[in-house]
Length: 153
Image (cartoon, rainbow, N blue to C red):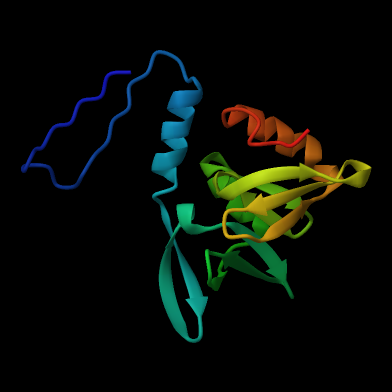
């Protein structure tokens, strides 16, 4: 793949254009990376914080509120899981349980368990359980994202 960089002081804002013949795994990964630079707003202790999508490990619904789990902090966000997935699924987010959405790019490894369940070991050391009902769509999404991510056999 050829990459060119151009500096133009006359630009009103920075711009990235991606030209490709076909969307292969390399282009898909690049698109996901660029999309992950998007920002949402998180709330915590009467304060707000800009959160880059790439910082989110997973989302969880607790008492009808959506929380974004980062490396060592948790923020409430103003999304339902359905709306978040509609907007940001192309960035590597997928539902793994009734109230859980995970960032595929933050999974360190996957361990199989009994009854077709799987344990997702996150980069921050947390362990999430992939519900059986979501396993098929999860595995399809993993394959689309560039192959099996460290799945143990």
